[in-house]
Length: 557
Image (cartoon, rainbow, N blue to C red; front, side, top):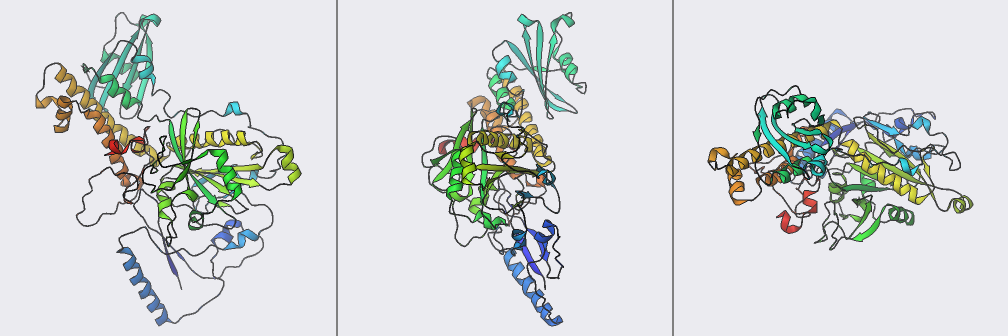
C-alpha cells in the first residue's frame, strides 16, 4: 500500500504542490546506520498484504480524494504529513545542530566533520568584534548623491542597439583635475575617473562612454535638461540600498522534525524569551512607527507583539513564529508561513538535541538558516562565564556564496553581547549574499532593466518638454504625458509599479502561477492583512524592499 503526500511551499501566498510517495517496504536497520538513512526510513514497521481487488479500490479512492482536493478554493491546505521516524533521538552522543538534505543542494558551516570539540573552555578563533563587518550590497550606489549632486555636472541619455537604454553622468572635479563618469546599463553601472591631463580637450559623452565600455556602439547622446533629473537618477541608483531588514525566527523544541511541528509552537519557554531579549526588544505592534517588515500595525491581524531592534544604523524586524497568529485546525499554519516563508533568511532557536534539517521548510525564498542551541552546562561553569553558552551553525543553498563573519572554532559563544553582534551581522550579510543566488539575480536583472527603461524614457520626454516640444511624440505614452504636464512623477510611479509587478514573476523561479477562469491578473496593491492572496514582500526587491512596508495606509492606497 502507498500513501500520497501533498505539501505546500511558500511562494507569496500562492500554493504549490510537492508530491512524493512513501512505501512500506521493510528495511534492515543495523546499529551503524547513517543518521540520514534513519530519518528517511519508513514510519511503519509492520507488513500488510492486500488482494488485487482491495488495491484497486484503494487506488480509486485516493484518486477521488486527490481530485476533490485539487478543486478546493484554498489550494495551500493539504493532508497532514506522515510522521518522521524518531529513532534519531535515541542515538548516543550529542547531535549536530543541522543535518544536510540527503538530496543535496545545501552547504553547512561549520561542516559536520569539524564538530569534534565543542567545549566552552577550548581556544576560540574568530571572536574579534572588529572583524564583524557588514557587507555592502552596492558599494557605489551613493556615489552620485555624494559626489555629483553637490557639483556642477551633466547627464545624457541614449539607446544602444545591442545594450539598450543608457544613462550617463559626467562631473568635472577641477580641484583634483579629473573627470568622474557613471554609465548606467541594464547589466550594471560602471564608474570611473580620468585625469584631465590625458586629454587635449574635454572628451565627448560618446568618447567617455566607450572608454568605460567598448561594447557601446551609439554615435550620439542627448543632453538631459530636466531640472529634477538628479532626483530621478538618485532614486534609480539607490533602488538596491535599504537600511531595513526582516528575518524570521523559528522555535524548535526537542523531538520536532517537521515544518508543521515547528510552526505550531505557541508557548515560549524562559530560555527562548531570554534569547529573544538578546536579539531585540519586544514591542507592541499597535501604533508602532518604526520599520514594520510587513506586519500590521493598525488592525492587529499579524499579532499584537513583535521583536524589533536597531543595529549600526539599520532597523530590523523579526517575524517570530510564536508571536504570529495561530490558526486552529490548520496544521501548516499558513498565517505564520506567509511571513516567515517570504523571508530570505531565518534564525532557528533549538531546545534539546533535535537537529534541524536544511530543507524542512518548503519555501522558494528562504535560502539561509542560522541555527542557535543553548548548551546545557553545570551551574558552576555558568557562573564562571557569567551566563549560558550558545552553539551556532549556518546552512544555505549551494548557490549562495560564503559570507562573514567567520564562525569561531569551536562555534561557542558565552558572552551575550558578542552573540548578539555576531548574529545580527551574520543575518544581514546572509541576506545580501543570498541576493547573488541564481533565482534572485535573475529577478534583480529583470527589475533593473524595467527601471532603467522607464528612467531613460522619462528623462528624454521631460527634457524635450523643457525645450519646448510638448508634442505627443515626445512622450513615452499616455501615463508619461500626464506625468510630464501634471507633475505626478511618471518615473516614480513606474518605479513603484515595477516593484509591484516583480511580485508576480513566478515563472522566473520555475513555478507556474495558478489562475482560474477569466480572473484578471492585473497586479494591485493591497494593504497588509486584507487578503491572504497577496504575494507579500518578495525578496527580489532591490533596495527599498519594503516600499509598501514603509508606507502609511494612505500612501499604500
